[in-house]
Image: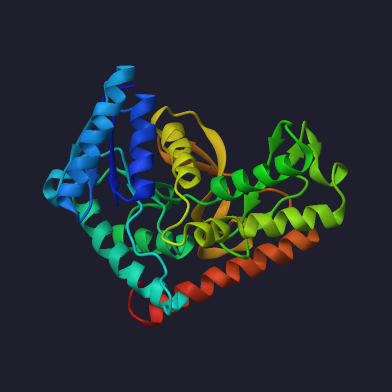
Length: 313
C-alpha cells in the first residue's frame, strides 16, 4: 500500500469521528488533525491514540497547528465551517462558509499539491465548487460527501418499513431538499423498490430521507448528525486509499455528463487512487430528469450568488 497520510481540517463531531473510524481500520500510517482550537485538537489526538492502542492499530494521530506542518497528505478531508444558527439566512451560511473554505483550501493546496480533497462542509455542493476553484485542482481530485449519506438514510427508512433485507439505495443530485432518489436503482434483495412498495409508501420514504438530517438537528438542538456523515466519508477515503474502485454517489463538477456543465452535483463515480476515475451516467426516468434538473438549478443559484459576491470566479 505504501506510506499513506490523511489530513482532516475541522475537528468537531464529524471530523473526530472520521479520524477515530479511520484509525480503527488501520488503513493509513498517519492522520493529521487541524482545527483553530489547538489544545482541543491535541486532546482529541491523544484520546483517539489511546483508544486504538487496544486494537494494536499502527496509525499515528498528530495534532498540527501550522499550515506548514499540515503537508504531504494523500487525502485531505475538510469538515470546517459554521452550522446555521437561529436568525441566520441560508445566504449567510453560504457566504460565511465559502470564505472559510477558500482560506482553508488555499493553504491546503499550497502544502498538499498531490492530495485528493473530500469536502464535507455545508452547503455541500457549493462548498465543493468553492474548493475546486480555490485549489485549482482537477475535478477528479475535489469531491463532496453527500450521496452516500443520503443513500444510507434512505436504506434505513426502507429497512424501518419492511424489516431487514439486503437494501441498495441510490440518491443523486444536490445535498438538500432537491436530492433525487433513483427508484429503479434502489433495490430490496435485488428487486426494484417500486415492485416492493407502493407509490405512497415510496413517497413517504423519500420525504423521510430528505428530512433525515434536520430531524436529528431538532432532537439534538445543539448540533447535527455525525456518525452517519463520518461513516460515509470513511467509505470514500478507504476506496481511494486502497484503490478499490467502488462506485458511490458523490458530488463532483460535471463537464457535460447528464447534459450539464460547470456545476457541482451528486452522481455515481468510481473511486480509486486517482480520486474520481469515472463518472457513471445512469438512465433517468422522465420524472427523475425533471427532479435532477431542479436539483442542479438549485446549486446553480448558489454558485451564482458566490460569483456575484466575488467569492468564486
